[in-house]
Image (cartoon, rainbow, N blue to C red):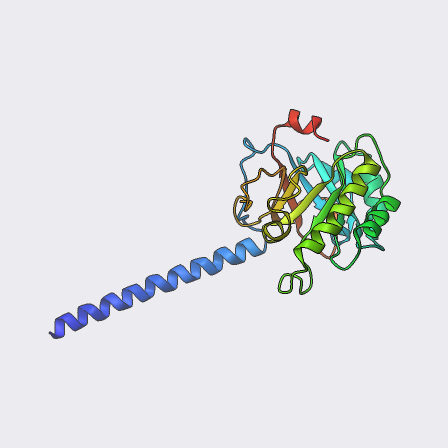
Length: 251
C-alpha cells in the first residue's frame, strides 16, 4: 500500500512537471510572437508570392526607397478617417511611395459615428484619381467600445453602401472592404458580394463565415522591415490571393 502511494505521488509530480514545462513553452512562444521574433502566420511564398504592407502615421518617417526594397510589391497608405480626419503623414507617404516601383492603394478608416456621404467626401477631397491606383479601401473594424457595443447592422450597412457607391462613382472602380473576421461576420457576411475583401487574421489562415474568397489577407501585425522610424516598431504584412500576373492586371 505504501509503495502504491509513493508511485502515485511520483506520477503526480511528473505530470505537474510536464504541465509546468508546457506552460513555460507557451509563455516563451507568446513572448517571441509578441515581439516579432517569430510570426504565428507566415504563409508560403510559393503559394502567395505577392506581398505588401499597409502604413499610417504610426510608422513615422518612411524612406520609401528602402521600404520598397524589402521584397514587397504593394503598399496601402492611410489617408482619412471619419468625416474630417486626414492622416498627417498621408501626403508625404503618397507622393514618395509613387516614386517607387510599388503599386499603391489608399485606405479610409470607417467611422460608425459619421454618415457615409460625408466620409466619402473626406476621402475624395484628399485622394486624387490616377490611372495606376489600386482600388480605394474602406477599413471596417471595431474601435473604442464598438466591439462590446456594436452599432446596428442595418445602419452600418446603409452608411457603408452609401460610401461604397460614392467612391465607385468617383473613381470608376469598386472599392475593397477591409475587415476583421468579427466585423466581417457581423456586417459583411452574405452581403456586399460584389466587393473584394481584404481580411485580417494574424493567428491562423483566414476563414470567412460565409465561405467567401478573400482577395487580400493581412497575416501579421508583427513584421519588422527596414525603412521606417516611428512610434510603432512593427509593420503590417499582407498577401494577394493570386500570382504576379493576376496582381498586375488587378484593379
